[in-house]
Length: 620
Image 1 (cartoon, rainbow, N blue to C red):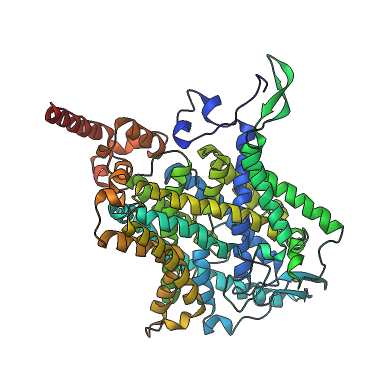
Image 2 (tube, rainbow, N blue to C red; image 1 turned 180 degrees about the vertical axis):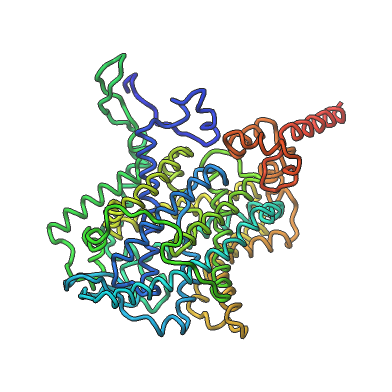
């Protein structure tokens, strides 16, 4: 290898905090940062762009690609802002925020009320007649005709879906205040003292396993099975397997081999450098190669032209109507659909989704910290992260994305594959989300990525998340039958029971529809069921602290006085507030009792010094 070879930065978030002293080693260069930021954008694109399509039928816009395009732009715009807030003032890990499927189910339940179903009629685009193809929720892939509508008819149709959107907005805003309250009061942080690796492992593993259902969309294999019984890669397994093979090839087999790239410097002039492009951009390269290959096959008519066939979704022009009808520039703004409305049933339904989203995010925090090569987040960081997600959901409700925000597990998986955990990279991706949310034509362009390509990416990502969750079991004694039972039973039950309840939701009948909705949504969430079951079993079945792995775990996630000075310094660099805000809040004595504020370092150091002296005296 040449002496000019550039080793790809295996950046961790703790090392990044030192970038003012050594920026070249710890923070990726600007081109690398932009490329990795684009990769994060593309990784979350599939899940995010699918949410407006799922909500299309309940909002009565399944045949209105212009309205769907507006929702796509809005949800990416909100996701970018929420990611910037979370990575800067929230948990401060390189974690991406985006729409959540936990709020899709209560949204559909709310829109299934007689008040809304009785007033929903086909909503069309008010332009000249033309036959196009489009995927809707109630049918697989249908042909519809855009009609000439009068101004009054346009106003009626616009109000039809705007009124539904305002109902969803109000429910999300009010229920998200509960999440903010949970975070800022420290209730989530207080629970961490009872949460160990036997609780975290099934929760994170079920995040990855349950996300397989979230990825099943568009192909419409069997709508009678369950809401998410569509299958992403089932539309064309050949393209999905090609994408998987490319990711495996780039990230595992070729990641050690750099390639020569032209470069220029004042000292050497024009020259070649050896760059580890496969190590840094395996997902992005796989998407581009598979996308281009799909475009060639589309041009060669290798895929069917009939939208009713699953393989049609492998075409690059399967969603061409969104690209044609979306505007170049559109700036989402608060209350763009009108002032939100509030109903008790809507708030309680969304509250169930918010609770499930919080449990999922808690697992994502620990998974991201492990892949980022830093210590697990302390209580004050977890509290801020949960609260900031609530603020992001409130913002999403105000602007009107039709959804809230949560941490994205698939982007955590991208960190595991690239081994670059840079906060700057994720923030760069967030800026792209905001810009492309405004320049909606570019966002529509990315929506032409074929479904099986996105499905192939998700299969690899979700496998990474599942494995990261199970890796937490290294702290436990897995020779213990107690721990084996808790782990296995929690994971299997967390998969089986939600699957059964999704197909038999009528089994929950308390007589109170709002309560039924809350119970169904919570018990239909694998992470909530498996995580709660593991939590109860781990804290009730007798077992020693060492057997449960709590000794090592508490050393990492316990109070600042429980860990050594080097680890505390790393936690401060990663999780303390930026821009000198930590010193500012420490000037106020009342902040000592606020559970979302970083602890005072001087007080912690003094406590540790006293404990160390006492230990030394006892040893002497």
